[in-house]
Length: 179
Image 1 (cartoon, rainbow, N blue to C red):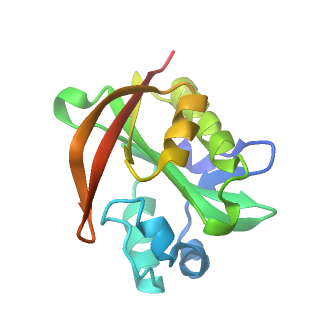
Image 2 (cartoon, one colour):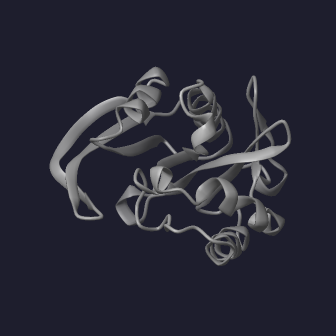
């Protein structure tokens, strides 16, 4: 496996690189929005302040690339989002779950599709992960389209499987085998 700390992925418009502690001040201006948090687990807090950024970065920069491959997404050298994969545990250790988010100003421009394509290719080439999975909240059809464009297949829906801030919706499960 490759040295993750030196990994740089490039798309047509973005650079994906491992998170750095120095990213902490850049995270809140793009991450501190209810619209982003609405589509993520409670691990992605709202409000998102510099303390939350520091906690995230301290945890994920301690052992990069061992069981989590997390990238900052930059466009024109500016942080615009994040993505990554986390290895499954125990009997699911051959899999990894993928997640991604972009600052609201970058939605609907095809950037997420570029990012998921690059991250999927990296995981297939540089790790021993055999399958990627992702979950999407029912109220986020744009994210479902991103995954489908990138070769992920819907593997099922958990009816009313998510409750966020008092609202309930379905949880869609996606998967994609890696070469």
